[in-house]
Image: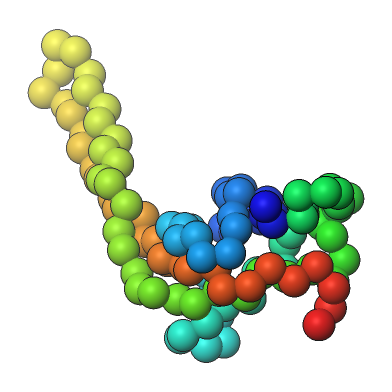
Length: 107
């Protein structure tokens, strides 16, 4: 089983061909595809290659399916015995990616 561990938007994901991941939004040249160069580990089922920190020449080709928003995160501050409270929330934007190909060499 061929798989790789990649870093996207500060998070690490274990991916294989055909997987769908929801990663933090990042900028790309194209609106339809993305190329991830930060491959930390690659395994083809027989051998494992580990980068330091990344594997040189390796990349993951992905198709961009769409954009989503994560669950709402709420920050709430309350001061007792005072009429002081603060509530603020935000939803992080996510990019939905489908792994098309895992390439270990600079093909």
